[in-house]
Length: 241
Ligand SMILES: Nc1ncnc2c1ncn2[C@@H]1O[C@H](COP(=O)(O)OP(=O)(O)OP(=O)(O)O)[C@@H](O)[C@H]1O
Ligand SMILES: [Mg+2]
Image (cartoon, rainbow, N blue to C red; front, side, top):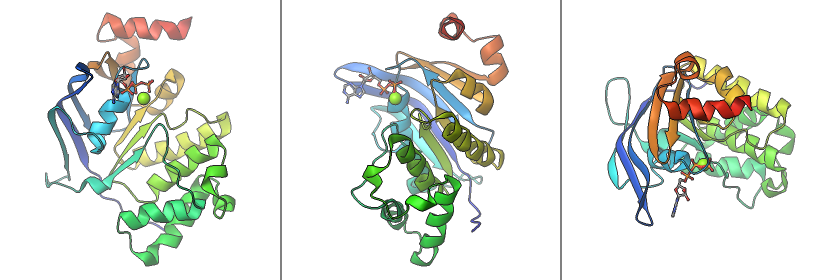
């Protein structure tokens, strides 16, 4: 079934988060809009998940503001943010019921749910697992289910935290193809990855974090060829080792 989504602009301005009297995110400005996929990278612990969590409304920032607006600048509901977390929440129920639970929480009409669920599962080649207990799926299958589940809600903006980290090359390719398709159709996507080859394949813009700060926000070519600072160059150098 085809559902025409309304794409939104998600903006974080001056975002800061303090944990154990330490700033884990400082003064972060970021915009996720319909201009192609934005990659978010940085070393372990640099603050990527914390930033995504604030953008998604799961964590209240200690500083700064998050806004979500449509093309006319009208404020949109946070429910339209699709979030795939680093560790997907999998409930003790079938794959189908896991998906249905999310659609129901988003007030998707009952009459649409079955079609959306089966189309979403088919997209990730999971339709044969619909009645299986979701907790018995392999970790890669759980990741595919989590992405299917978020996409079947037709989000206005999509935030994915290491969506392909446990996946084999075929599943990774499957997810990349779906994501490229969505981004090309205008879906704003923020994509966290440690995989620089994948970043090259998917991203138009790259945001680089280090120790909680955004040190670079550049288009893909510039990021790799004329990095904004020596920290980026140093980070990229590990790829060549
Ligand atoms: N609730 C918390 N209490 C204390 N420290 C926290 C808390 N949440 C996050 N942190 C710290 O904030 C920093 C950033 O964590 P975050 O999970 O955002 O990093 P990340 O960039 O997503 O890393 P990774 O690539 O490993 O997923 C880390 O040093 C982490 O230990
Ligand atoms: Mg993380």
